[in-house]
Amino acid sequence: MSTPLNYRHLYYFWVVAKEGGMARAAERLDMAVQTVSAQVRMLEQSLGHALLKPAGRGLALTEAGTAAMAQADQIFQIGEQLPAAVHEAATGQGLRLAVGIAEGLPKLVVRHLLEPALRDPRVRLRCEEDEIERLLADLALHRLDVVLSDVPPPPNPNLRLYGHKLGEAPMAWFAPASVAALCDQPFPQCLQHMPILLPTHQAAVRPRLDQWLERHQLRPRLAGEFEDSALLAAFGRSGMGAFPASHWSRQELLQDPDMRLLGETPEVLEHFHLVSAERKIQHRLVQALLAVPPG
Figure 1 (cartoon, rainbow, N blue to C red):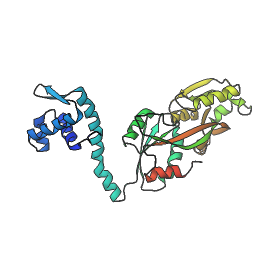
Figure 2 (figure 1 turned 180 degrees about the vertical axis):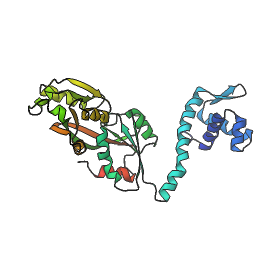
Figure 3 (figure 1 turned 45 degrees about the vertical axis):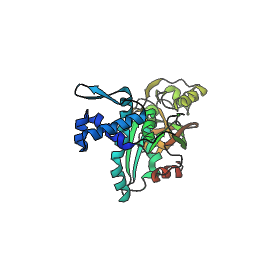
C-alpha cells in the first residue's frame, strides 16, 4: 500500500517553486531555510524523484517537478476557494451554480434547461462556454458543478464522470416573413425554394438534419453554417434564410412578430445531457435540474 501524500510537504515545495529558491520561500513561510529544505526532501523521497535542481543562484523544476507543480497548482487553487465556499454555506448564501455549456449546445435552450434551478431568487449562476473536453476536465477538478451538452460524456478512464439524460426536444423550422414569402408550397417542400442556415457538423443534431433533408429529397441552397446557435438564429432573423431550432425555442422566437413557424419535424430530435462528477448528486441545484424533466 502506497504512503499517503503529505500535503504540508507538498505545500512547502509549491511555495519554493513559486518563489524560485529556498531562502525566499523560508522568508514567506516565516520558517528556517533548513526546515523548508528538509520538508521538500521528504516529499522527494516519498515520490521517489527529484523535483528541484540548482539554477544559477536559485532553483528550477525538474521534469518530475513540473508535473508535481501542475497538480499542486490545482490542489491549492481549489484550497484557496474553501473559506469562501464554507462562509457562503454557513451564512445561507451558498446557492451558487457553476455550469459549463458545451459548444454547439443551442443557447436558446440553455435557459430552458436551467430554469428549475433558477426558481430561487438567491441563486447566483455562473456559466462558461468551451470545448466539451476542457469543460469535463474542469468538472473533474470541481471547478464546475455540472456540464450541459448535446452529447453524453465520452468514456475516459482518467476522469470519473457520470452522464444523466436531461431530455430531448423535436426540431422545428423558422423563417422571417420575407423569407417565408418566397414560396407558397406546404412544409417541408417550401424549404427547397429558400436559402437555409444550419449548425456546423460539430453539433450532434447536424447529421440528423442532413438525413431528414435527404429523406425528403430536399436540396435547398445552404446560405450559412454556424457553430454558435445564437448566431445562427440571429442571422436567420435578419433574413439570411430559414433555420432549424429546438421546439423549446419556439415561444421565444415567435415573440418576434416578423417570425414564422414553417413546420415541425418531430422525427428529428435534439438530445440534452447533464454531466456530473458525482454518481449520487449532492448539489441541491443540480438535483433540481434532474428532478423536473424539461418539456
